[in-house]
Length: 269
Image 1 (cartoon, rainbow, N blue to C red):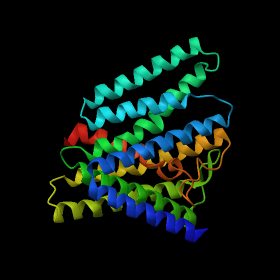
Image 2: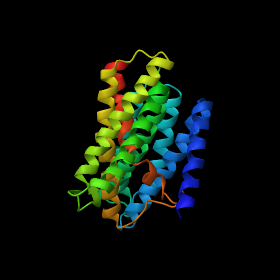
Image 3: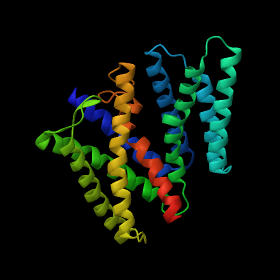
Image 4: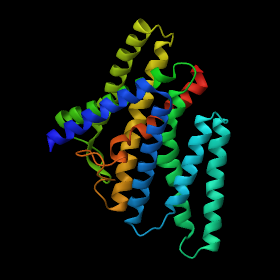
């Protein structure tokens, strides 16, 4: 099982590097594919609880949002409009269809936002005019550093449970270690970027972004665990051998990338 997990991770990393290098439609379509798979996993999960979301509505609006983003049709207008239209459409279906109730409609819209729009923020950050690709690489490295430090420090020093009802193995010590790990990784990566790639991002920004990632990545992990516990499932899927589904592997990134993109718009764009 460990070898399968390592091999699966290696293949994923190689493809990620390839998609980053190619950019353009290769990267955009890769994100779209991952997004649709993740939305499918979410809808499948809530069906385990007896709910009946409308997957085709979610896929339709995710594709619409993707087209708006890649064609530069005013990102925020497209995001807001997509969300409102999806909500209105789902509410209308509760009127004309006996198979869809209000809760099903809410879950359908929620699936469009999480994980749908959260994954789409990968394209938004990658295509940002200033620092975009570097900030995305920075976010991914810092997020994975958070997960790694939290795991090993929690394993070695963890005594106090963080959220035993949701994730019994996570500890306060591991959580603090994760934030420290994100800070260390962020400073190191920031030094490399500024020295070898001549970026002019101040170190205070690297520190703040690292701390934000260290906190929000753990929020994303716990949120995904909460959904799985609510749906009474162990993993969201099996598409990644040894890792589960897309949501299992990228639950932290779904929180960190939108936060970093928001920070970029507020302070770096």
